[in-house]
Image 1: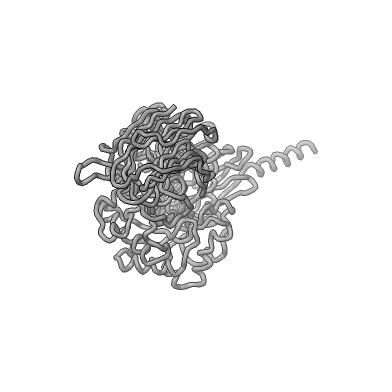
Image 2: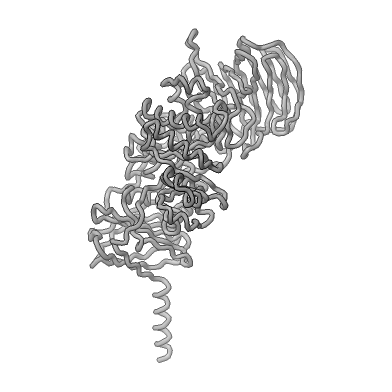
Length: 640
């Protein structure tokens, strides 16, 4: 008898420990879902535009096409400033004050963010667009100034005029403390320019002590409260979504301005789904932006592999659809912006390691429930009781199970009397929905095999797109673009930034990168023209690109007066220096060869440097300048 009672007690505790009942009242609607989005910034999308068709369109479908892949509802992009913003320098639409005062169509064709926005809008017209500055061109002199407010306003108007792009939101500045008077100035400038529809999203801080300071400031300042539409912080997940009380009292939308899954693997996928659910449950965050949209920058640069897809070998056409992409799909394919969170159905069971959110279309009776069990250790059963206006249609069930399968349709669940149960496995995500049309998109064309960077490559720039970086080149600092000579119609590569920019982090001079970090022996040649005073550099064996630091490698620098130096970059050590003929106003041919430990430099086929040094063994090459105009032509590299 005692044994039977003990068995009953044990069974009771087993059921209690591994089952959970959640009652959801449809009337308990919370905040409005605004969608999960991604951030193209810091040159993270640089190489995507270089991909050949049809692969480029296939990649874009995975990112933006509704009910196919990530189904992004939000796209945030960098408002370029000719400064290094993580993995390169995104171009400003106006490199100089003169270009700002006398805009042309060509200026608004610079870079690739406008192109990316148009491709996103082509696939999903309802996607929302935000812009944000990391830094600004040097000619603006000061970031928090009338000039910069006008610069932002003109950029928004130019995107509309030249590309029919409507910007919905603008931020203040990435991860640099905002200025309250400048927010007021920007708001006034936007309104005066007829851009009152562009709302200000303020915050963008990442340090724990600063993350949500904007909420406290708004609570004390009625003018700031009027000017700011939404508040955000970066990586709020790193502080477990701890917000100050003011954030919930100021009646502002609460967003994550930049969250990090930190990779394209299953570990990153698990982190992402936890963030997506818990952000609303713990902090009432209704929009999450992840950096980066896509890993379209080389692995040798800072923070490699940040995106949900990897597409950084355009010469091969190869790309990878990675697990985090389907974590976007698990929420974005199951709810639209405008749906409401149902607070009763949004719960986090911290000790058990799982969470659930419920989203409902208040215009109909459709709903979706997203369950994540990334911290759970064992299977358990969840019993749902639905009260109110919920559809009685069968629930489609889509599951991703850690390291097993991705975004797989399972058997439907038929709620009986507004109740149903589901048994969930640990380390998984489940999307239950009364809606239909979701799919796990597949590549429309066979994905080519990956290939290493070409070891022999030449480009005279005559067939490259104007106002863009040449294919496979990456501006690291400053502003490099292909231009056409008005007299000869030849196309050249031009460095256009004439002053150190208002930096996000410091790089000493303009440079544009090329190649493979594994290259050991290289023969680099290029023609150059210095129309006035200034400096030209060629660099080799560059490696170890890290935050806010000089890049190690060999650098040959020559001025218009013919003064030259061979520098051990990264250590600022001069290996050799000397004088050659003046170089101003004419084209010259420059060669730099690194073979084993032998370094040789020639100008117009005349030897300038020949020495032996073993300091650096491998790395990429680069063209560089001072803060001066320089032209390049007939680039050629042979490497091994």
